[in-house]
Amino acid sequence: MASSSTFDVALQAKIKHHLERFETRRSAILPILNDIHQQYGFVSPAQVQALEDEFDLPRLQVQEVISFYSRYRQQQPSRYHVQFCDNIVCRMFASQQLIAKLKAKAAGCAAGTLSVEPVPCLGVCDGAPAMLVNDERHLRVTCDNLDGIIDDYLQRASDA
Ligand code: FES
Image (tube, rainbow, N blue to C red; front, top):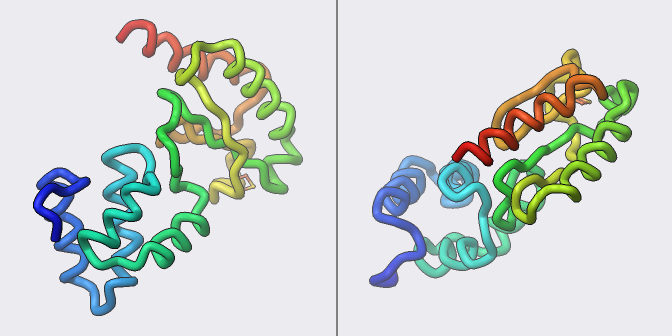
């Protein structure tokens, strides 16, 4: 292992722990990615390379997992990153109009403040249309309540 790691000491320990508790290294990829994603908000190509260089986790196997699960971002997200479900049930409840409205709102914000990503089913179809703002879930979003939800986050950004 390289003397200076891409990951801090605590994260290195978590990665080692996951690698030790599973029978195969491949089985540890998901929990490792979860920890990296939780700490940084994304998993960068450099971090994927570091997993191979420092922990002998094949880069292609890690990249396969990242590509399969839409929840893993590969670039630093905006301060508020909205993942809006664009699957069939949410589409029946106007998700596409809501996404378009969000994108227009994001375009009017300062760079790095708000971003929008249509994603597959979030698994809460009974609360359609649904979105995540960072990791906070919002259900039954409408054209009427969308602005208020997002403005609350933007207000927090301006208060900080
Ligand atoms: S279709 Fe949108 S949460 Fe399932």
